[in-house]
Image (cartoon, rainbow, N blue to C red):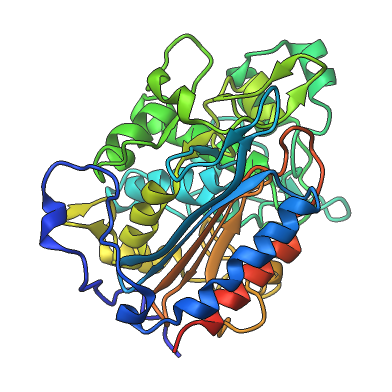
Length: 409
């Protein structure tokens, strides 16, 4: 079945056309869009079990169906240390790797549709000196292309393996040095396009491309060309280089992990490469947002690139994002910046028809699942890394996905 990514969302209300005030999507009862509210109430019990078991201190869950928010609830605590603070719907979370699909991918694809970047261009076209893959036996070389970065099929190392060692050698707050290190030194593990290795370094290289082409920091570009266009009041990066964007939003952020005994990370990205080396402006992690803003951003994608008359991408560009490239080996099974069921089955649960599902998760405990067949978006925002990096969200994500799909009549 062809994915109906371009079906328009017909239920966005005219009342939303004025100045944005939260909530930003129309809110409807589940029954108004063909869902069973009694079944959705089961989400409460599975999250309560996770909180009681110490998997997470709290969470916010949002479900969008046919362009309307039909379930939105805060659970548990925003913070447990240094003091208890109850979770609220406007809590902003460190999105971690959701930055890849909801930020960097959109930015790059805007450049693609403007004719400033081509997916099949070699990365070296934009980053001089970027090293090709070289077959260790035949010495044959093959270029790594922009599409390979977006689909995690480049073969680059998965992450900066030893941040303290890197800092010892090159220093903290050295993004240009890291760009060069990845381009010239990071290992290439296989012929590009033939296999998949999830890599934060892919998206740091995409950041380098975007910043070279636009002359702007990634965080500034996305703020101007994506977040502000859609009126997202609670979405931003918190760069640590002395050039803040929205410092007044820091108070809304859920804290993440204690680093050492005293430093509690809040409005500072948890990922050590993004925080220590890239200073909060990074293509792999660094976005913060709340459930309402993410609902609008995902609704724009599900609605062919626009929400409420504000367009961030063209309709065909969105189709391309969610398409699995045919010239990659089938084992890659990823679309541009997004997981499919076949690359990340743990998020989908047991009930959704999986063929057209797209989703992504973040290390801190966040995830987004988009089902074009039923026009459903599932947003789970949690901070399992607070106050320490323990617990796993895998089972909880699957349970909530199954409950959501099972509630569709």
